[in-house]
Length: 225
Image (cartoon, rainbow, N blue to C red; front, side, top):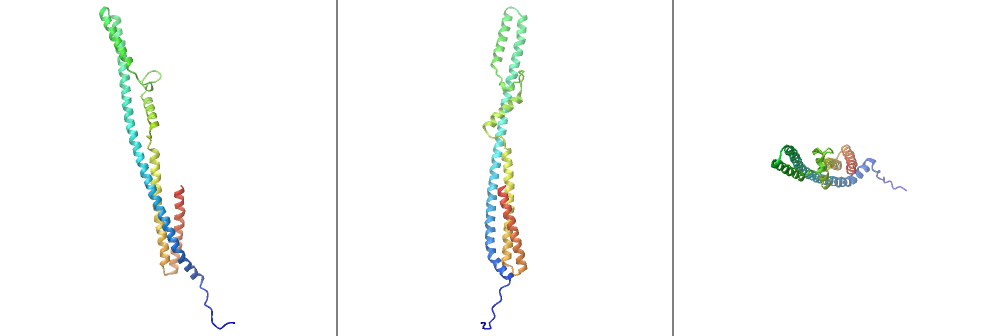
């Protein structure tokens, strides 16, 4: 039986949602802050990895240049040895021709000189890797062999490290951009919380949610890829 008093009208749906939104916003701001911290941390890690890769690339470049200089020194010695041996053999052949035309002590002296040239030439050993099948000098083949041996002992190619550094730098920049987006999302949500105009609060709420959702998805994509 009614006592004539009138029960209060239930709150409007908009008012209920506004109160619910005010409860949700602090949690979303906290989530946004956590994601922003993660993004900043991962950006710092990627930047540090890029710096490390750049240092490795520089070290490999220096090692490669040092190795090239050492190889060119070796090539120079091989070329000098080959030229000396060729000159001694030519001298030997010329002296033997002269000895064939000489007589007596002169012939004996020339033969002895030719033998000396022959012995000296025999002691000059040219690396087989620097010789073509026909016995001519092949310095490019020697360079390839020396480089292959050096590359087998240490990393002389900076290419992979340069590519890794570029990839990590790009990742770090993307993460910094996503961190900025998350800051913007937190700002929108804060404005939605403090705004006194329902329409403006709803606008900031929707904008904050959209930026937060896009940033979270992109953060996941950047980390996975």
